[in-house]
Image (cartoon, rainbow, N blue to C red):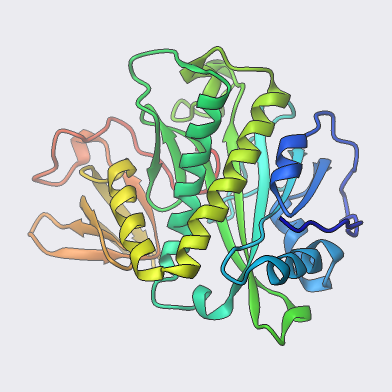
Length: 337
């Protein structure tokens, strides 16, 4: 694996003194940077893409040197960020020594990001997070703390769930790389925030959870965070290498796996569309283009592609909702509920 040394520009309002090192993550990624406090790890990467920073150009060279079909993965992590947000711009809670805060970036062909199957990029990122978390927990020897924990699930389109509550969230962005105009690649950024070592009474809402609440025998924060970063880097590389090399087969595999771990399916939902209108029904399946298929009470099926999807309480469920209905409504706003 090719790696390049780099001294990226320090973004405004960032401090370079992290308390907990991440050596395994640094070794796994083609580019790595760790901050103590930063406004937003996604914002840092956006700025570096615009400026043609050495961090980004190093990733571009690494991908060219190894293989056009093996994406290079860069990672920017922080002990804390002050302006993190989810996909609808809502703020989220994070604390040093308790939260996983990182953004990953991969240079991808523009045609892949703008293709008909581009909806699967966010789903692939979610499945990489789900796989990475599961692999890291196994690597550190963590044990399920109670019968309600059934592993890591995904709430369509961008939340990480465990035991029916929100463990964290994912924010994806595609950003132009002006310095790579000749190759026409786009930076695909995946921001991931997870609740690691929060006591239940320290969580932001009753609908949130943490690894500490769901697992016993967790290691200290430094080791846990580093294992998560290492595993997610590897999982992202595998998912996106498959999409680059065999897109049709990769999409079929993603659809099968997402269906098996999608917490939303089978539940009564209300989708708020960009124009403010709503669609209510039961989340039935994942479409070939990654849309969420919702069956209305009248039997009509709607494809939801861009919406804020909330799971309805049982009392408000439409006729025909099945027994998987839950007793609270969850937002889809990004990283913390």
